[in-house]
Image (tube, rainbow, N blue to C red; front, side):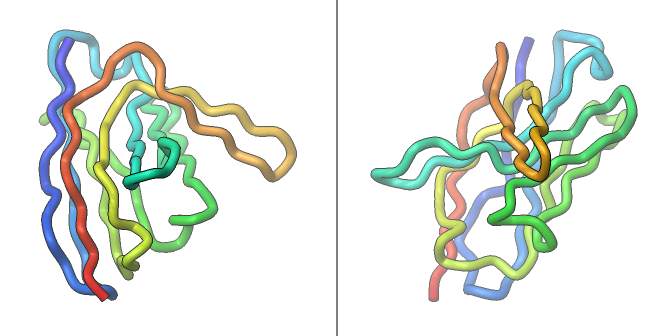
Amino acid sequence: VQLQASGGGLVQAGGSLRLSCAASGFIFHSYAIGWFRQAPGKEREGVSCFVSSDSSTYYADSVKGRFTIFSDTVENTVYLQMNSLKPEDTAVYYCATCRVTVVGTTIDIRGTRYWGEGTQVTVSS
């Protein structure tokens, strides 16, 4: 099983980037795949999760309305379109299989078994 993340880079505040997570070695619909990020000195944060079985999408409050997760089932790839980027979005971004727990209005996105290498996203002010 492999998850290969790409698409990071340096962008100015207000700009956009699209991250890609190419999956191989397993049946694409058998896992939810999402994105996580970790900034220096901070804990890893679940950013978004795509549940392919019903095309449900989940987002952390910090990125809701700015980031969009979607998939290409032909390419076995999950994308994270990031718009209106802020300096606080600067982090190493990882894709991973994920699960989501929803309690009331609180969404908790956690990584599960498989993780890809990270890709650096830097947003300058």
